[in-house]
Length: 348
Length: 265
Figure 1 (cartoon, helix red, strand yellow):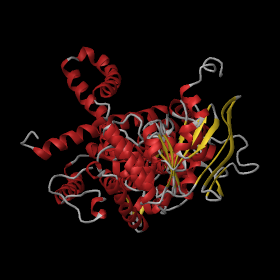
Figure 2 (spheres, each protein chain N blue to C red; figure 1 turned 135 degrees about the vertical axis):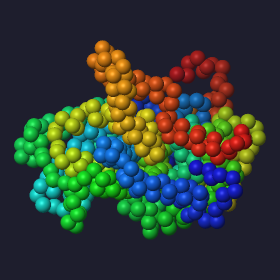
Figure 3 (cartoon, rainbow over the protein chains, first blue to last red; figure 1 turned 180 degrees about the vertical axis):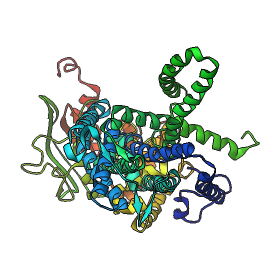
């Protein structure tokens, strides 16, 4: 990104910072403080929405690294999140401490993701989508018929996570735990994107032939992309499992994979901040539609049924409208807004 | 022994021979050009050297393509950069989503030695190496006068600048041999002259050996130390520009001969 007028750097490291100007750092600091203070004014329901957003942000940024940055489309993301959920669940059920369980869940999911990423060497685009769809279906089957490992159709019941004797058993306590993980995931992906791995991923996405010529080992880097993305998906799954306290096989279905794809398209492919916007959007959309349909329902009691049915339709409509009018996603809109305020009140 | 030694390279696609027993050599620090009519097999030759295609026989048997005494054919394409091989493409093959700076930084990919963990935390080795390689990339940016475009997305730049960025990406790897596939294609006179000057400087100042594929005969004859002519997958001439211009086969290949015009194929 080009800095704003009057912002000069005397070292290359200075320019490589995530937040460059003092003003930016101040704003980000204030934003983090605001997020820390936020639960004080939120009720249980709103806090639970925030918690869902945090978990979804981790999942979305993971998929965006794979699909948006490296260009490897995946329809198995929901299943990878499921693998993380079961792995973390089994760990804590066997007495592994919670932080370690999350780490192990991430690593196991990374391995599973890399195995299912192997076809990416030969398959591209829509064909890779089908191959990862196979991963989704295979893993769903395993979840349902995994015996004691997955609890089959009964699922697994988990206890609230504990760290050093402190139990995260309320929405407010979970808020801080999930906030930490979401922030760490965002920082991790941002760091990858400004180092040689991120550049190699983008080079594979943009022109794999010349990526190979400049020395990027295509197969290895695609596998790394699958691995890192699945690691974060596993973390998201482990957190989700311990947040809800219950894992069931049907959560991690193809619909989940598709809604994550919708998130990164709405948010902006290849953009970290876009993943956040997309996650917030998709989590909030049903809530907003609920409020609207409840509001309308009280005025027009006769059509409550059809309004509920309409909600699904509205979801699809929003997706299509985004593809038509904002194909680069909310991240693009965000850049435009920032550019506008940078110069305000002048036009140029 | 010659620096780049191509000997008896044959490349066939299911019975269609793109290259038939082509041999030539390029001496260190010189500019060699590969010319020939459209479809003669020039780009196929570059693809064989850079690793996109594997010539018939592959790595088995005597080595067909060697760079500085090392056989290239036993290495996959992404390993050949480490031996000092670099190239540009005929159609612009930039990473459109990256800035000019990052495009050049990717060019140094194989020299950056830090692992995934260092990258995730952006700590220690990663910071140090990014800084170090950024310095080298800035040298290339200065050399090619790309500094006004440093932070712009490569895909949004004018054609001539994109061609220069691509040359920059190849140069950023600090190659010993650089393969240029039609660097002047589609350029106006001024841009062509600039590019020719860059190529001469690359060979003289940077000591890089250049293998050039180009259709602009004026440029080729002016800057090359040696010209290799290919026609229908076969080498028909090799020598200094003057020798090649006087060669009967070359004239026939480019201009045709009366009696052979319709019977050649």
